[in-house]
Image 1 (cartoon, protein in one colour):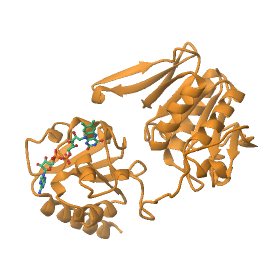
Image 2: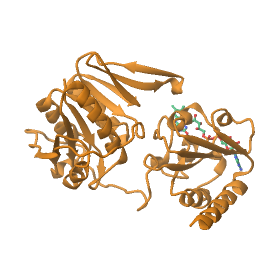
Image 3: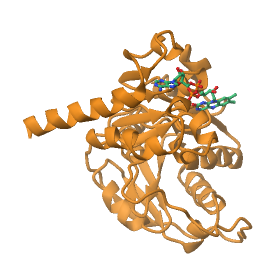
Image 4: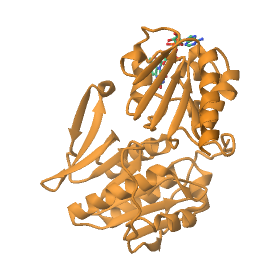
Length: 327
Ligand SMILES: Cc1cc2nc3c(=O)[nH]c(=O)nc-3n(C[C@H](O)[C@H](O)[C@H](O)COP(=O)(O)OP(=O)(O)OC[C@H]3O[C@@H](n4cnc5c(N)ncnc54)[C@H](O)[C@@H]3O)c2cc1C
């Protein structure tokens, strides 16, 4: 195994930020292993996404806009990735640790009969072997795991690497359709989140609300206002999502998204371990809670004690006023 493949997740031709982050790290790995760097870009908009990826150091960018990729859930993408990995290598395959990447990565590892290291925040190479660094047990320990065999699938946590553009040969290769495949799970409808809304895993500032917020309205008003004032997105604890106050796509934590924004606000959130594992790597954590002894105070950089309905609007007002002065 010398070559490295990066699966490029994109939305309608726009690569997700994690795709750029993985590409930069993947080049370092391919160089250390003495192999080539490949991208696999699939589905509607793949050609546009491939063009965007030319700013990154890929030797080869494998593309398919086969309509079946978007018409059926996951399996066609697994087929294409499996074919690419077998043709190239077998190789180390990097997927994002996102909703799609988690699903894709584990199915691909089963197909390739190899291991998968998930929620990986760094990759090191020692004596030609890949070691995947991953926080476990709520971040209390950090493990470095190799693969039993020579290759494997690595699911990379978004925001783990800095994306640094640096163009490579970027040769485009059309992937052949895997032969003899039929699919059962047809996608009937795709429901997009509110247009223009930045996904929590892409945002550099996230304002999350929990049970303390008390209902759906504050997510659309005071939390959104604060997020908008900082160019960020609105997140949520599971308690808020389970109550139906905001969609699951906004959930941060063990059964939601893992994020590492520069600034994370936990508003009316107690800081349960399952929430903590999804946001603990945020650069700065500000908690707003009426309880001065709340667990999140133990790992937040700043705990503002008081009623969120007074503090959040005042904070937004001050941020807007300050922005106006510096405009
Ligand atoms: C298998 C499993 C997976 C899970 N996955 C997740 C996950 O992905 N994400 C997740 O978040 N949780 C997850 N949970 C749930 C988790 O254990 C907690 O139950 C949940 O995070 C609690 O949400 P919360 O902090 O919003 O609510 P609470 O713990 O009820 O905290 C509400 C907070 O709001 C404060 N508050 C109330 N009113 C105000 C006010 N007016 N002003 C200021 N503060 C106020 C309170 O002091 C309190 O601290 C999971 C649980 C399990 C078992």
